[in-house]
Length: 323
Image 1 (cartoon, helix red, strand yellow):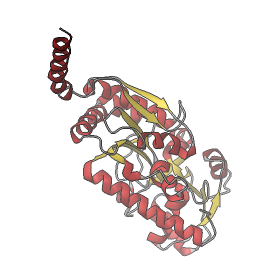
Image 2: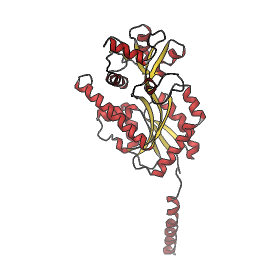
Image 3: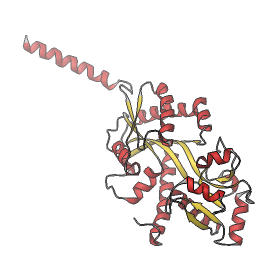
Image 4: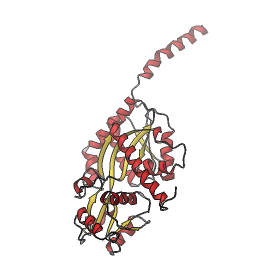
């Protein structure tokens, strides 16, 4: 009797294995790690698109904020998670560029992730006072070439992303600006521009949203390949310069996640991305929708990182940065 019972249980277990293997993803809630604090810009965008993606995915995706280490703490958890689709993460500029370049965490390797899709970009831009004589990037570059080192441009941290964008612009256009650093962020940049302490500033258009909206300031170029839906500012391509840089949000999964699962996650987020609700919402916050997926995304991420690594290494050699 005992032997018969055990045999029956074994037979039942064997019969259930194929059914479990055929179970459709997702069977349980999916965890989305945001490596920045709740209530910030990245958090808000990820929560919005993720809420919309749930319906297409056919399951719940809950957001968990894990701060620390310039995003390394949260992203590190995604890197160490099982590649089954039940852990996802949101990557930003620091996740892809700053942390890998610093090399302080041997376990932090980008090849531990499968990139799913880039959702948005918030490109660096050049902003001037509304009364500035600089009507375009050409006007600004002409002035910089006429008097090298005289045109004052405000950035934030030396060695930070915006500073690197400016250094690339100088190299591409054979110009030289007088660089003034404001480590406190956009607030002191605003004061500097309005008080004529600098002639122009470089940061995101969103950082100057209130001044742009009330007509006090205006953008003359945004270093993006996608048109900003909120502000009528020329893209880099329209301005005739091959330079793209800024912040972004990329959805990623642990390496080894099955291709069909990655494809389903990508499709769910693409549906959410293309929805009128998400596109209209982005237009209210000054962030550009900028979808990229597949091999193109991998190529873009690698080229972006490697190009900026070169710039930062040069700053180390010049004594501007320490690594």
